[in-house]
Amino acid sequence: MLDPNLKKELIMEHYLNPLNRETVEDKKYIKVNSKAETCIDNIDLYVLFEDNMIKDIKFNGEACAISTSATSIMTKLIIGKKISEVKELIKNYYKMIEGKEYNEDILEEAICYDEIYKQENRKGCATIPYRGLEKAILEYESKSE
Image 1 (tube, rainbow, N blue to C red):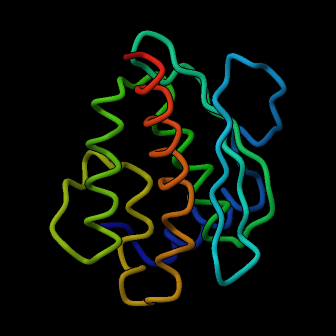
Image 2: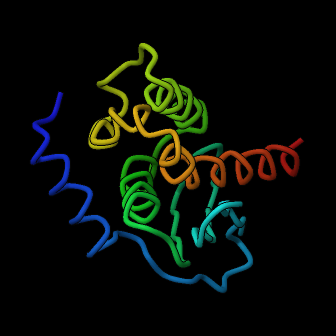
């Protein structure tokens, strides 16, 4: 459990100085879009898969502090992980967002959103990058079959 002030600092740091924020023009990357239906949040993810692992991920777009920081933190957590590990992370992240039991260790810094479930309208902001990542994984897996 993170201190409330530390959570805010972490979110603001990743919003103001997001990691892995750049547009990629390399065809090796799978590009997916994830956006909100009710606000400006609109993020493109560029995911490079190799041997059932996420070798690299970048993102760009316009989004609020929650969406931008959640995307930045997500990119940090998944680079170098196997797809099976990433799926487990996504599953636990969604559980946390819904206020259900989850494995805190898997989520690392992403636990800064552990109280988002109390703000129904912010759940969508916090899940935008993960919904996009799921799309990218599905696309990669369908090409790999």
